[in-house]
Image 1 (cartoon, rainbow, N blue to C red):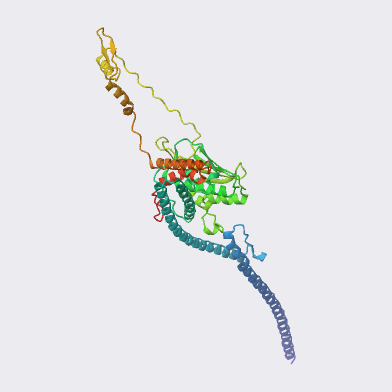
Image 2 (image 1 turned 180 degrees about the vertical axis):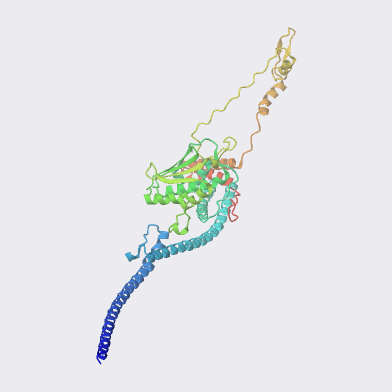
Length: 485
């Protein structure tokens, strides 16, 4: 009887312990659930904060950073802002956003290049037609200049030809910037003619002073004549535009170790360091040329120089200041683009400045001394063949001079004409230069006799013979689009 209460008591004790354990477990689970709810609430708040920050960052990317990247393509000094939230810097999200900017930049560059290439193709086609029309007008004007010899009409035709030359230069520069070919000359030309030819394409050519210190006969190979003339014209145009109208632009042609340098010095306003750096990169031709980078209105001079320097292996430097306060531009022409022309057989144009270098002294070859063998029959026959000095032996064996006869006198008169070689035929360039000088002299004499002045205007007395000579050498060249000069 005593065993049953012990069993009940043990069971009650075990149940009590189980209840206590179960209650402790329930209490522990409640605390854990409370902690989990708190963590979930905290994570939810953090997620909401991250989502808000990400939305703000994406909005900052779309509103601020991507437009800045687009503007930076045309204005390199525009700064692209960084992430709006500092915690994204260096994080996977920040790296992903930077990749988005890089992709946008690459795509914008590709699209911009594609659009610019289409614009250049359109401009190239338009300038091709303009160039062809200007070449035809140039040929018509020169045909009129050769047909009529009236001084006033000739002066007017020269002025019209000069205006047409300026328009042709602008069209040609535009075509070069858009990737067109400048054309090939048919023969080598004097370097000084290419320089004066570029000078004569400008409105203010009378302000340019060219000093030729080259050796006589220094010339350019055929395919470098027109590029050098275009580059010199653009450098001179830049110097004339940025200097006062009462100042001069000085051009010096000098020999250097690796070739020839054409130095252009102006007394203008100069350039700031930023402008000088931009001009240096542009004329080097290393960066691609885009029409949208040339400003409004587009400034194509340095861009055309950059394309020509890259195509024809020339060198242009505009980073040095001029001793006159402006800009010094140096065109370097290496030796492989130079050639030699005999200045006696093919002299430069009449309007081209002559070289300041003295001509080398001609080497004299000593005449071979005749071998005398007195008393021989050969000497006697040779003496008898000389007109006016025929000698006959007299009775004493001594020679006796005979008086000149009519035949001997006629032979003596005709001897110089027979000894002189035939004169070489005059080249078309020389004839054009002589015609230009004759027309200028005639106009000057008539103007002086009428009291209108002491000389004709600079349009007819300027360096036009030089450019006419250069253009006549390029006449008939095959330019792109079928335009022929």
